[in-house]
Image (cartoon, helix red, strand yellow):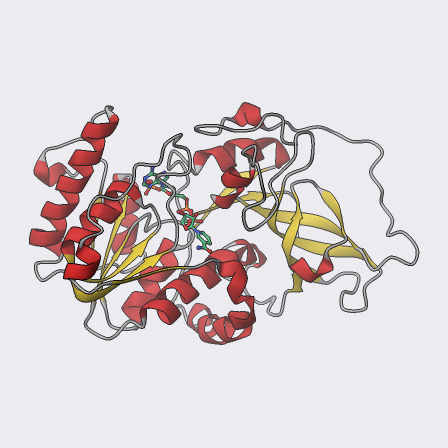
Length: 355
Ligand code: NDP
């Protein structure tokens, strides 16, 4: 349950885990609701935005105090009043952060079409994050063989797939992440051509200081130096932005003429009382750049095509995926909060029950 509206960085104590003995374990008569057992919950940065006391809904309604929070998950149907869903089938989509849910807005759940891949992938690679990577990269940036691609928060749920899609298109792909372990994974597991730790780039002998302005300045300097001299001596064609802020500024300075920026997310800004702003937007015109923001919820019609593209790559081992699994609803608050300190290594999800 949401216990406290969040301002600033979310804390575990903003959420509360309770046991409710009076749970309704039947679909009401004449209703087309679906009763499910939730198996996996997806930890996604957008949930943080919905935990604020929103004066008005943004693209979806925010959470209310004392209510169960809701997000993407994978579930098994226990009972159904809806003709499209049968008992025993697996679904993914919007469900409650609870062990059992009675889902009434059935247009927000989808039958799982392929069960010969890990079902947990439908919280990430084959769910909302995967579709985000595909739309934001393949469809918005039209990548071409030989182009130079830069990805921030590259080892996360979205970033790890963007990098692999880039390699499959024949691009030169560089990612940045916040720990040496993640950097190693980018290069060894996901096939990135290069990667660096934006918090401590050892080759430059600098570490991000605690002061916000200094951190910002150092991040910009690190990325300018690395991207200009080591990774992208000729500049960046496509920047897939998951973080915004200083990283976006640094990328703007390194873009090539006619480059494309996919404005996917701005996680560095979500917890700030005052957003930092972007200083080098003038590069948009001097370099004739295109920057496009998008929200995956507008693109669910592309989902079948996305599966057609991605499923064969998963089955033949050309796309791999790393998940970070927390166990049990009692560990869900820590897992969600951990996204904002970079605790997750790969797609963060919560395992609630056996399949
Ligand atoms: P991740 O699984 O990558 O988790 C978030 C990661 O962001 C952390 O692990 C951390 O990695 C990094 N991070 C956290 N705080 C900061 C910070 N202040 N500066 C830089 N990096 C930070 O999340 P997702 O892959 O699910 O999401 C990535 C982005 O995509 C988010 O911004 C999200 O909001 C956005 N998104 C947008 C969608 C759309 O429709 N446009 C849909 C889905 C997601 P590290 O250790 O590397 O710092």
